[in-house]
Amino acid sequence: MATSKQVFSEKFIGIALLSLAGPFIWVVHFAVVYGVHHIVCVTLKNNADFWVHIAIIVITVAALLALLALIIKPDILQRLDRDQVRQETTKEFFAGIMRLLALLSIFGVLWSGIALFFLPACASVA
Image (cartoon, rainbow, N blue to C red; front, top):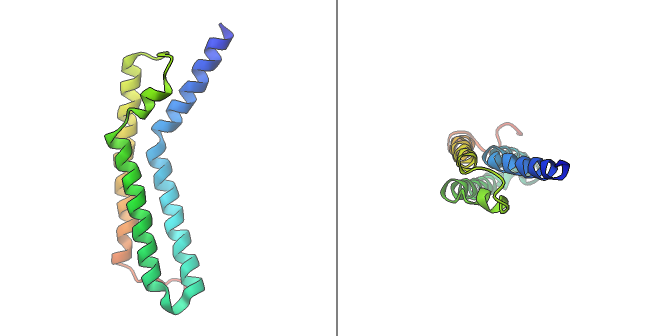
């Protein structure tokens, strides 16, 4: 009995963390956008505007594609549960949570990615 509970809890933690993939992508995007932004502004000074815009656009598109993949293909959770330990309703619940959190994260990624069109690129560093 003890081994089955441990296997269940390890898989449960993995599935629970995977259902939080959307907010994790959002956090990484936020940190990378502002980190790259400041590093490029400090190192390139005069030529930074173009490279900051390109970097933020590429990072934002990559994050949006990852989040869209979570929304479109939530079956990654089913692949983790090969032993069919959980009930179907539990799998559907975690897939729904993953989709909703990824949708919320899309708005966060867009919010920080669109800011480059409204704010000057390196005004805070100058």
